[in-house]
Amino acid sequence: MEKITYKIIIITIVLSALLFSGCIHNNFDEPPEKEFPAGMVMTIQDIEQIYYDSVAPTMRPYKFKDDFSVYAVVTMDDKSGNIYKNAYIQDATKGINLRLLSSGGIYEGDSILLNLRDLVLSDYNGMLQLDSVHVDNNILKLKTGVYVVPEKVRIGQITDWHVSRLIEVEDVQFINSDVGNIYANPDVSENRTLENCNGNTLIVRNSGYSNFASEIIPRYRGSIVGVLGKYGTDYQLYIRSIDEVKLVKPRCGEVDTIFSETFDETVRDVPIDFTGWKNIGETGTIKWVGTVLSGNNPAAQIKNDENENTSWLILPKQTISENVAMKFVTLAYNVAGAQLQVLISADYNGGDSPQDANWTVLPATIATSLESRVDSGEIDLPQGEIYIAFKFSAATSSRAQYFLDDIIIYLKD
Image (tube, rainbow, N blue to C red; front, side):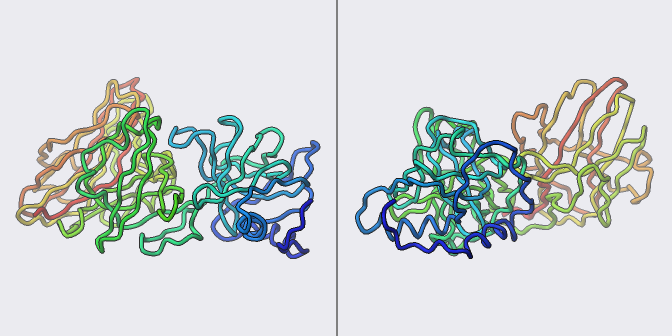
């Protein structure tokens, strides 16, 4: 093995035991009983030190010849098509890009022991990578479904430490020239640009082979979860799932938010019981409950039990002034025999019998499938004190489900 001046001492083994304290909230299972040469355990930060000591001075790749290993969690795979024959992993110290010999085999949420023998450490235009990863020979899966909490960061706070790590970029919107376009045209990779209200920008790199390439870029502001890459001196964000693009707030300087609900405080399968809200089963027993959509995205859910049901989810009373609108997002599954409506009432008394009040159906676009999140469109609200309700109705034998998310009431320009 070549002479290297990096630090691999007993403390490295101690670090490996503490590796996933902090933001990775799962303990590793014991490895299955099979031969796997773990060798000396190191961290990704140790690998980075090898790069600085052995690769950077000569700009020649370094090939591992001995059994060194790293415990890590896969934070991005290539299932969405936004990256190909690549994956990203991270531990408590750093993140790194893996270049795979073949696509698939490891997936987001896999906790792994990565053996470094025969892997090549190099730099691809400013980003550290481990090349020639054979999933069967170099990787031992320890557990699946490990959730890594993305680090919340604003554009101006991004540094090299975040490269190859999972982040949630807050308070951003796509620039005006990107709004209304698709994320990428077929068969090519294209850049789109995020900005914050201070004018800082960040590239979003999208593949035309991704399963969200043809989605329309929204005009709203919010947060996006993704893995941070780097090309030259430019930071680039790689989206894992379109469900992690949560742009629901008005653009910088456009409007004031009067009311919003993203259902982040819901608990899976527990009836929604927010202060001031009403969750009422008029006919039948089902109610709106919390759920989690793909991408760890909380939402409200109503699911029919094959009986006749009518259920109401009613927002707190709203005092609406001139030029106010609302919008929300829905998804749906197996909607035959059921419908979801959004209604308003000026004479509902806030009690447990909403059917006794007069309600007006609002014009809103409601999802009919789970294929993508459907924006309701901008719905103008009348002035005065009103209640807004989401009414679910289903016939006997219906197995319909609706999902509700990202409600916002706002003052228009």
